[in-house]
Length: 560
Image (cartoon, rainbow, N blue to C red; front, side, top):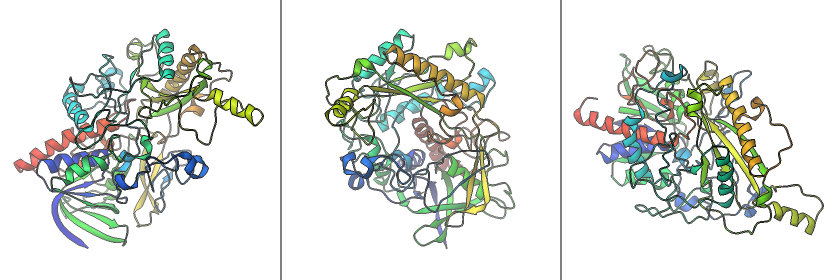
């Protein structure tokens, strides 16, 4: 079936898609949003106040619910029914799909760290990876606008890895917990600074969203809008303009071109009826996630685009990067048996350790080129299916042992920058299709020595910090190749349609506009030229706001 819409079509409703749709709708342009997943209303569906004790397995994660029974990702995960993907021999990669209105923003950690001046011209500095087609200063005012709109708590620290926001933009951060203060003191002895984590969580009311009341896990979703997700903010705000229409359960199949190779329409499968529907489009914005958007382009083959749409450079699907991940934790004797009180806060770490080694890398003192940060796990959390400490016996003896260790465990989660390499890419597996007959993705993956040496350094540093806090770690540290997270496991995959200054080695220009097709844009993390250690969602939204604003001006001038 073919329908004539002739409007702007946005594929995806997460960070990039919702921000693009809101920006364009606010500017007066009609927007149609296609979402592959189901509709979702966080006000009525969010299990905010559900306790682990009410759930099977005390709420623990399993194959059906990767992050726990009450996680806000309802039907999605690393395994999605009827939607397989494949991996090459010797590769291991995990691809998270949310498949719901709002995408991953219903579930994400809300960490909102700006990229810095260190992060945009890495290749010019050390010859590795690729440069972005602009500097930090170009993006700084857009970060301000995004933080103001979204609502981010934190402080200006003056640290060179954490650029300051404009005065009055950031909301106050929550007070650090006792374990975090102890860790900060230990890190300071080692010459390492800590800082308040910047999170997209309201500590003060904003528009019709309430402030966080420090009671429920953000991962459950947030019906009051305090923890940012597009389903309580950008999407209803865009709908309020009267310019946004949404179609859910719309699995995009391909982008269609005419006999001259010009993009004219987009085809999707209605997952409820299995009917294929084609929509005429003036402009198409792909924001379906880095790998899904690349899949759509690679599946959009024609005589004029034999290798897939917007792929004259051969870079669509290449340059996949994820954040590195590793973990080390220990029981801290000084925290054992302390008085128990409510230590929830906004339920994630209030302090973190930003990267402190830029000058050391410039001096050649480190054997890896890019940095990392530590996220801190600590405090009196809600009891679940596991317990900390060595439990011997039963009855009161066992109870006392558990209570003694409650709140004494501190863990450090490393998140680091990965560099692109020739072994990490995706292609279409023509031998496998999903339920709707669409060819699926095949992943190739291999960490390089850069990432392994970074993780090795991080584990040694984490051990130093924990031991300085008083922990005793008797076991040898694991080898980096064993400790590092699997590809895709941190859910920060980027780079598959990277932007650049030349159509020879990039897919889009600085505005996310594909070099080959002037009316096709990418506004998700696929356009990232690098993957700094900071979590990517804030920059996805910032780029989408900036680039959709540019697009709106071009449309108003009639240049597209």
